[in-house]
Picture 1: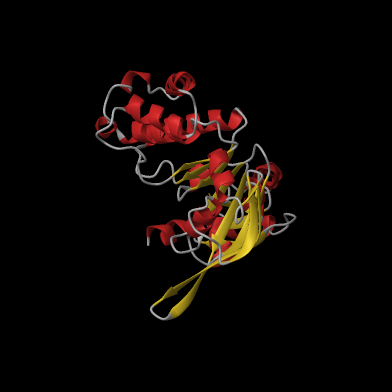
Picture 2: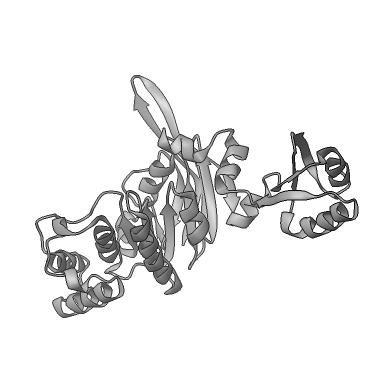
Length: 315
């Protein structure tokens, strides 16, 4: 659905050339939900704008939804949906009129346009707000309206740019359900987000961009496995004995003792821990607490770039 090779974009600012995106390769298969992560200034938004025909690449080539990005941008626009960060409808317009007008822009006859709007409003739980003005909707309702307007023409590929930014937890959870439903229906989705839990929960595959280059790619579990492994931590009154036994665990590394706390990493804490607990019990080592921490996507970014994605995004 997306095949980009060597996609790059330069900007001239204050007499200097800025390499915003430096020759990225992107492949997205039909039906995938791919997350695109990166801090502000990493090239994430520039890449998204190029793929959606809003910004012409300085170099490289791409086919999006079956059309050449450079020679047939109109063909790309006909076949994609795009939900930007900002609200996409006029605040003074009635919700149903705005959505119907959007469908007409894509060439749907009036009867089919109204049918499609009603169908989407029902699935996105917008029917009761149809005759309100868009400005009177809550943040979550506005985002659902934006998604409805982005898929009225049944696009093969949907771009979502930080769809849940600024929403409360309940609205975010509700929106996630609707995104999952779109994905389940067969829509290919390319999603940018600063919420790591969102990428972890929704995405089949994740790409991480930093300084204009793709620095990591894979499923959430594959990316987490590239970190040093699960962190296992336990407290005991005999930490030196516990550490000696722990050192014998296959693949255990980064073993540290601090006070009564023993910490180490293993590829899979859930499978290594039962055997270790039996060994500690046989040595009469009493444990006060045990914790296993799986790596997070922020750990992945920290490992790949030396900085936290969340901190970089906030900055």
